[in-house]
Image 1 (spheres, helix red, strand yellow):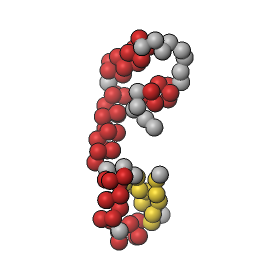
Image 2 (image 1 turned 120 degrees about the vertical axis):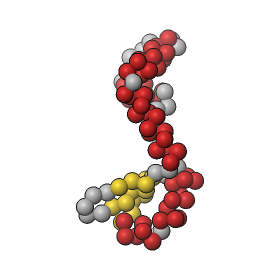
Image 3 (image 1 turned 30 degrees about the vertical axis):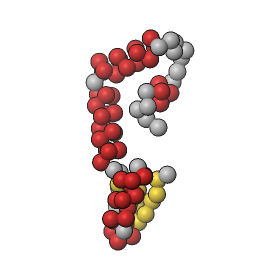
Amino acid sequence: MIDAIPITQARKRLFELREKVVQDMDQIIFTHKDGNAVLISMDEWNSYQETMKLFRDKETLSSLLNALIKQGNSESKKIGEVFNDLELID
């Protein structure tokens, strides 16, 4: 679950919030009138970066999709369902 907290309150609880995102893989939204930001764990950040790398590499992405087809899953799926099956997105 993603929690939202005003940045002024987050400042007072920064170490506690850091612990929460690291241990529970939670995300925290810091709200502010000038724009919001998100706090995530380094592991989650690295996972997102790796996923984005796959999206940018069309050859690797094509290989992943072809592997799915070869598994005998030849029914039509929406692209979001394919990525869910690959555990690339929630």
